[in-house]
Image (cartoon, rainbow, N blue to C red; front, side, top):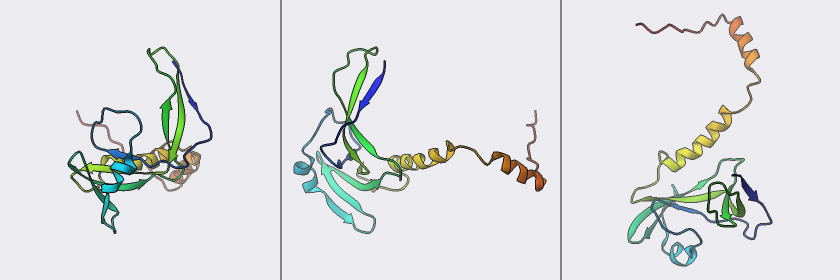
Length: 155
């Protein structure tokens, strides 16, 4: 099975995305501007925290910018897939560079899973960068008489 992603001229320049901590049995669009944005208000201008309610539950949210060099996309499957063996075709319908994530009844913090996942993108970029300076670093270590301190574990 292969997955093909189709790009075309986007109708919408920038999508407005919300990540809500709940399970909604619906895949597709929603009238967010009409039913959700009208009840959203800023709680704290300094931290940029929003407050809203969804199905009677309090939500607290915050806008999060994607890291530099990244762009989010909204994908739509162009045809139904009935088997794992079938090829899939996805079409990019919208793109975004920020989104609002919502917590159920708690203020957003830097320790939230969503925020720390954005940190991982930056860390992964460093981890997977080419190591060009290895030989140079090894030479510097020899000049400084660097000896790694490795001792075998006691048995």
